Image (cartoon, rainbow, N blue to C red; front, side, top):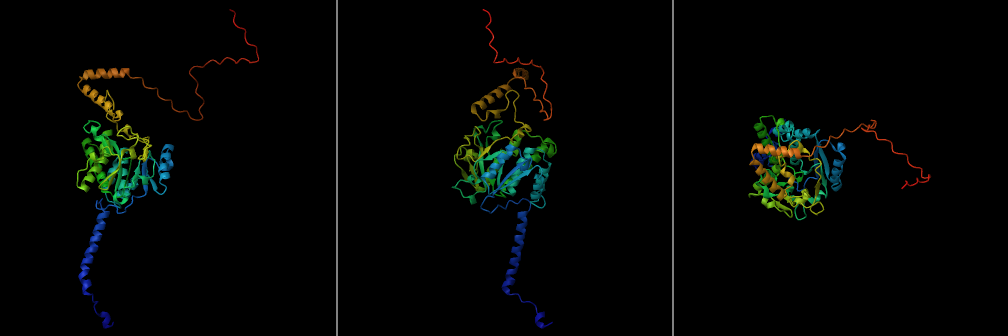
Length: 412
């Protein structure tokens, strides 16, 4: 081998001086990359200035198995947004989605995967799943019974810049005068979560998921049962995973990011959209028109973007509302002031009665109640013979021949 080949390679002094810094920078990039893909880091927020062109729904079955009413409503989203991707997570593929995105190959949040797997309350899983999808994917989430009245491009008024917005929500309930009410107080100020839009990796979505996990653990501990056996009433669902929890997390998040305390007062009687800290809030007509309260107007106004049909909102049967034994549910007042006032007065007077007098009034109420309707007979199979009537009617008299002369009148 020639002496030239055996001689050591000479590295310029400038490169020798900068090499350690380059190595350190490379290691830093590797570490940061690991933190972004690790267990739910809040450092990463999508840098794409646009909202993802996706529409997400969750339901029991995929679109091929939709009932006609669900299919007709779903089609409105495709018709109004032909350039959007449309996807439905179902009871058959939701667990695989959660494991793929929150398991070891995703965010490695095994606590979230475990909680979702153990839950049996369908409405809690539905709430949790929409938040998880919006954190991972972003785009538009909408319930299966919500009709699109206008395209998603209408969600952001022209005066706002899409790149400045991280999340779009609308007012649902705006009745703050009831904030001290024993039943209505915790649900009288809320954003709508049957339809909302956000960019992926919004920290508030992960915070909301974590709040729910913590709350569910506390409920299971208090009830001394496994997660799959917890029992929740209507108000617990609303405040634990539903609109109240959703609203609370959003207001807390905006307060932290803006350095000021943001309360519902900022969105009360909202006539036009308002933005603060990347949160765009639309007025009540946008996503919740026609409710009969909160000055929600109707679906014919320029602000109405969707229409909620409520035919998939049967979950309160498994999680009942507070039902006073004598005066029933205050929610039936639909926030009407005089009705709520009377319910409050009646229930307060009830508490002053003795147990004997309460039982007497309940007995009178039961005695005056109309009898329940008879149960409907099960439908007959197509090949079943016609039912035999209980009483056989005599045959009708034969028809008179019009060609015969009329009968003489009876004698006077």
